[in-house]
Amino acid sequence: MTRLAEEHGAINLAQGMPDFDAPPRVKSAAIKAIAEGFNQYETTWGSEELREAIAEKALRFNRIQADPATDVTVTCGSTEAMTASIIATVDAGDEVIIPEPFYENYVPATIIGGGRPRHVRLRESGPSFDEEELKAAFSSRTKAIIINTPNNPAGKVLTKDELKLVADLCADFNSLAITDEIYEHIILSLIHI
Ligand SMILES: Cc1ncc(COP(=O)(O)O)c(C=O)c1O
Image: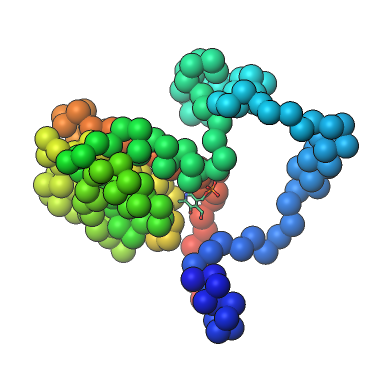
């Protein structure tokens, strides 16, 4: 879509393009690492220092107790984490519930894993799901549900009760909730024009 948008001079809604610069301290840290010759292979699941920092953040911010040695894996972005998680857990004949609209990579990952996507519509206003529709989507074939809140592209944020419903259904059907929390720290504000 990006190539087509460039070719036709169209407004490109297919790809996020930050319209601001990276924070100066991130840029200077990268420049410093390059200048200091920090260029060797790292432990494949992430440097110890970074995994420890992530575990500390998970405890402080998410109240999740994680062992940096066994519970934290650093990936090249959220896409790799989601794709690896889906491919690792989904087998032939499994179903993966993917609320729609959804970020584009969950469906291909499910198919590569041999599974079948099953969609549940996110509502425009009011509750995020039709509760009965969500319950009906779960079955003994459900390996996982993908949760992306705030959602790309809809911006929908699941309430605590909705997350509790998802958790209860996962427990009842022995399914996983695979969560893409890339926008965890984004604050969405509604602008009325
Ligand atoms: C929901 C969601 N997940 C993942 C990504 C991509 O993340 P990354 O670049 O970290 O792989 C995006 C980018 O738009 C996204 O919207």
